[in-house]
Image (cartoon, rainbow, N blue to C red; front, side):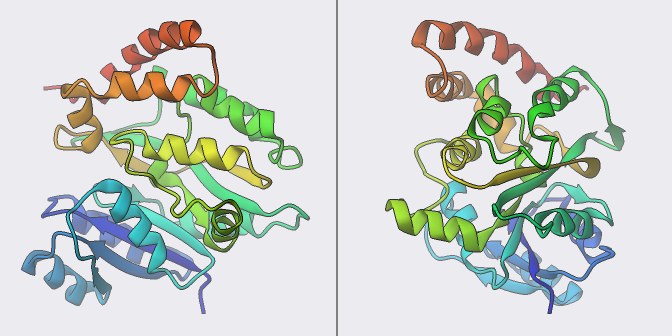
Length: 273
C-alpha cells in the first residue's frame, strides 16, 4: 500500500480542478488520492466519481486553516501532500519527494518540497525575479546532511516565505508527535488569512527535524485573479501579515523596512491582461 496521499482541497467550482486531478492520476508512483471540501456540490461529487476519488466533506464554515487541517487529518499515510485545486503536479512529484523523505537519516524529515514553475493562463514560466530570489534563499538547505540545522531552516524564512505551499509534502507522523509534545492543537492557525503556511514553517523550524528541498521543478503553481493570495493583496491584508511574520525574525524597525521591500514582490502575483 502506498505510504503517500494527495488530498485535494477543493473550494466551490474551480475551472482548473480537473487538470489538477488528471496530473495526480498520472503520477508514476502509486499514491492515494482524496478530495476534501467544506463547500460540497454536485460538480465536486461528479468529479470524484468520475476519477474514483474519495469524497470527504467537512462540516462548518469554510476557512483555509480548518480546510488544510482537515485535509491532513483524513490521510491514512505518513506522507501527505495538500494539493491545491488550481495547480498541476509533474509525473515524478510523488516518487521523488517520498524518496527524499525516506532517505536514511537519524533525524526525521518534517516537510519536503520542490522547486516549481508559475502558470499564468496557458503560459508556464520557470524563471523570473521572484522565483530566482526564492531559489537563492533555499541554498542553505540544499545540503541534505545539514538541512536539520535551525539557522538554515530559519534562513529560508527570514527574508520572506521561500517555501511554496502547494509543493510541500508533510510527514504527518512526526508533525503529530510535535503537536502532542508542545500542546499546539493544529499545524495551521486561523490567525492569518494569507501567511498561515509561513507561520507553520516558522514553528516547525524551531523543532528538531529536517526541511528537505528537492531542487527539481516538480509542479506548477497557477497565478490568477480568483486566488486567495491575489484577494489578500487587493484587500491590503498581506502587508500587515508580512510585518507580523518578519517580527518573528527581526527587530521591529528592520521588519518595517523588509516588509516594504517584500511588498514589491507581490507584483509578480498579478495576472497580465
